[in-house]
Image 1: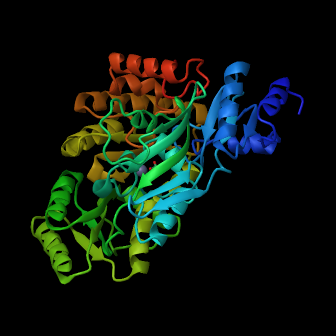
Image 2 (image 1 turned 180 degrees about the horizontal axis):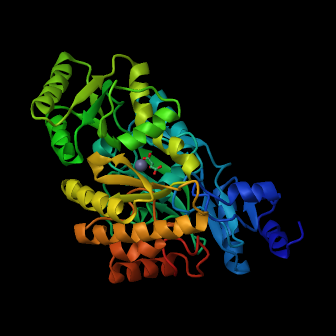
Image 3 (image 1 turned 45 degrees about the horizontal axis):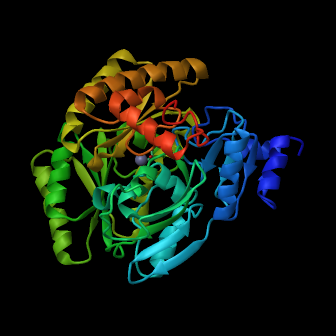
Length: 462
Ligand code: MLT
Ligand code: ZN
């Protein structure tokens, strides 16, 4: 190790684990966007809050930027290190620290994978209900940094709802214990919530106290075939009125085609234009009857064309695979991802307008529409045609996003529902947030990160 900055880092934090091999720089310097060439200075793997604090102090003095790093499953470039930054990986800080049965909380280090937190909660007969497909790799810290959503938001809300306390190291190097697991705390600004969704731009989340929910009820999964997207919200209402919905997800025939080509099993003999996966609480006859009633109502009113209900856990998993397998099935097309949200009531109008605009103006692209429709959150993935150069593809996709951003402004939506802004959506932030809001966000960053050490260039340019 010859870089004098790293020598000084080791002098400041004796014993700190550092990686500088080219393969490690490549591995830790990118996230799932795969768009930027990783070029970090080094990878630091602290083992304690004290070491994180030391790294942040060094960064402020040495003028080196820090990119906090969890499972790097992000889709917006928030964890990319392409400018000589130090990657601060929370990988070694992955322990469950405490379970409190009375408070129903679980305290974990930020590098704990989401699935490990879920399993720890389940081992105590409770649940951590934040859930999404990359649960095995994504970390609790990363999910807090993006206020991650996922497939159960319709029932349980976003990550923010489940954060009872945070320990953070701010960009100025202060260790703050925020909210300390309290249920009620009316003592001024709730700084905890500034860190939820901050994308590592204010400091590093090092520990989190998570609220736990009742264990999930027994559930059943239904796959519905729909004739058009116009009826989506009517189907949603019909099921929500009669059942406790645990998830309500949507995808198109195009998405299904890709998942089937990737090895999933076809659910129906015929193909249909749109599909919904609905998971609902069951366990007694009443719920089964209500599910049937919802389905029959939809059938009678021409809102659904067909349906299948899971008869076993294995079949439920098969139906879920049709939805959760989409991201993996599309990966080979290097999709350009959009992750928008509008109010649920606005979704049909937004879909109608944008589907028509994209088909008209960008017929060269295959666009895959899917997402968490019960939350008003759509993932609009544009697939790269094999014959198109990558740069030309990205440039045209940016025009698509500009078009979507315009529609979002008209419909009062957000350019990111759950993936975050990062680098990918930075140019579109001003369509979702007013100038005054962005100025306040920058002011908050200046207070918590006065030297701009934390993840500079992500979310906005300070
Ligand atoms: C999902 O919900 O499957 C992901 O957030 C969407 C994506 O890969 O674009
Ligand atoms: Zn999603």
